[in-house]
Image (cartoon, rainbow, N blue to C red; front, top):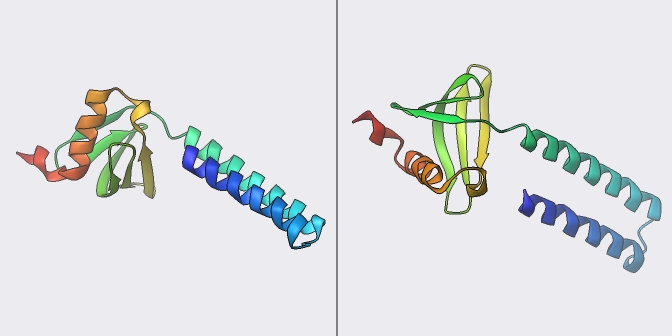
Length: 122
């Protein structure tokens, strides 16, 4: 979430700078700032609701938030962040996991599951 917050803060800074330097109308800058704040607020709320225990099973299956999901692919799998695309009964979504949300062993197991999802099949 810090990278997204930094991106929004940079956009706000550039908007304020453009209002002063490029003589963009102040009402337009204020409207852009309100839209950025509104979008950032809703993204922060959406990401704060994405929490809960993840249980891993064989065959790319996982259980999260009371639903069964299928791991479609691991888009990003690094030491700093993991981004999984999961498919559930309600549709697909992106699952973003940071290492500060779980202990080291659980994050390591999840990273191995993301890199080698078929390894649990035996």
